[in-house]
Amino acid sequence: MKLPPIEELDYFTRRTLVNDNGEKTGMVIIYRRKGEEKFHYFLLCPYCGKEQKGEAVFKRRPYRIECKECGKKIIVERLYKKNKKKK
Ligand SMILES: [Zn+2]
View 1 (cartoon, rainbow, N blue to C red):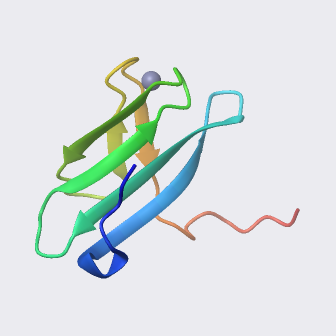
View 2 (tube, protein in one colour; view 1 turned 120 degrees about the horizontal axis):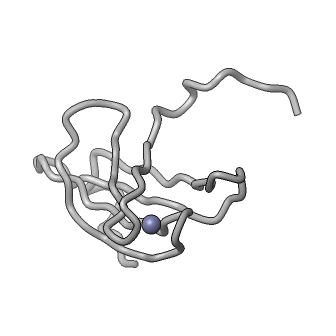
C-alpha cells in the first residue's frame, strides 16, 4: 500500500495481530492526515486472512476495526499499555 509522507500525518501505527491461537497471522496499519477527522486503515485480518482497507472515525480508544469478511473485531490497543513481561 502507498502511504502519504510521514510529515503529512498526525497519527500512524503499525501492529502485528494475532489470531485466537496467538499466532501472528495479521497486521494493521492506521494513519490519519493532519487536519482530518477520518483515519485510514489497511488490515490483514488475523482470523480470515483477508486484506482490506477502509476509512473510519475513531472516537475512543482502544480503536476497533470490524473485519468486513468474517465480522471479527480487531482491537488496536494503546501502545505501551501492556505489562512488560520478561522474555
Ligand atoms: Zn476477517
